Length: 376
Image (cartoon, rainbow, N blue to C red; front, top):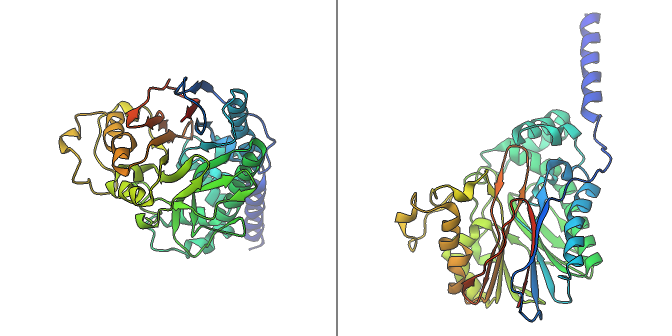
């Protein structure tokens, strides 16, 4: 019996050492991999401008607030050196940029493991007492463990996300649409992003102003894709707000929301002049593969069904997402950027879309990071 107790104590002690060792890695810069810095319209008067940033992220960029801030600052520094930041500048960042803060404060091995599933397993194994209550906070999600992981980390994720983008907006004097982050019951009160751990999870995007202000309005994704549906709730498209920004009335869409006519009908109702879309396309070389149709939601009645399997994913984005649909909204300008990087085994793809006055503008592609400036 004594031997068994000794073995049990020894196992617990070894687990405790393993669980907490390697949680405070020193900041080391990761390669920004910036391949393109480009003005999309060379001869335009720059009264207003949108700077689309396609960062190249790796898991170690998310291990601490300093890691996250320093990596993103490299792109803001580059845009500033290029002369893109002006009084009326809005910076657009991609979907899920903040979501991988789910590993912030975790073991280095969570970043170093080869698969996203492996990283999440490390989070669970090293935080069993912290995650257990959240397993029972289920809001009907099919993927209870994914939901529990995000609820466990929600407060620290929201705090660091808001701290980093408030800091960048202030330092560079620009308004930032900071890409999206998965949070439960998010809201903004007293210039603070709050979460409700008993509420459903939403894929949410926020706007940060240069006067240390977080916009009180937020946008939650209305059309989750199949990979999100087991743990992310859809928000009614009727809740989509309009932002009074320096570039004019602006609407924000989160990725798949840009594929549905209901989004553009709402934008027309709001009278927006600019539409900004943040996106993430999983998988390697996905854009060159055959389009498999709508993912998660029903195909709208205005879509040519013969396109399924006969055009590429990129061609489908052009035909059925922002470039092909913005005209119906009455908006003049549209910009869509994608997240790129080496995020475990998830893969990334996508190139930015810039639309002005009904025309899809040509841009230099980047397989890693890029910065594009559109003046209008």
